[in-house]
Image 1 (tube, rainbow, N blue to C red):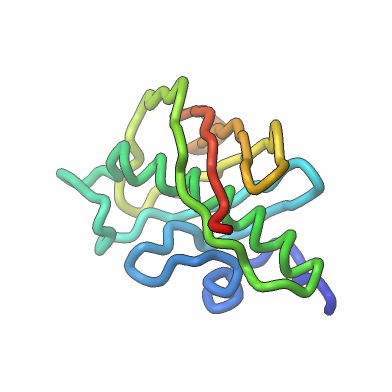
Image 2 (cartoon, rainbow, N blue to C red):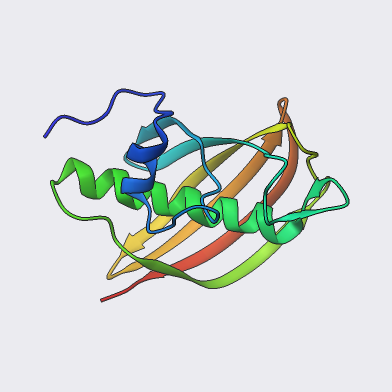
Length: 145
């Protein structure tokens, strides 16, 4: 099966790569993908369940990072003609939130895969707003057997 062309901004195709459904989908674009990285984008909508006082919350940013990792696994599975994997955040460490994006602002997240074996991913994430890093974290995610 042929991989979707990037950048990918087809909502149904993205939903097919991750285990989330509206209103929990926090990705609207896959910008780039390779064997150790994925870059995703998300424009903060006015009806997001992760808004507080007009800003996207810390929990929203961390969930967006985790969904970016899920998109990496889903895109990888698609390349192998497999179903997307279901995973869970196992641990978050070194999470730093510098600034919260507002409604209509666009964030982009770069996920680097540090470790991927035996159903566990260790990832490093950086979220930017107009090339300014506004959040970073390291996470462990665990895939459902």
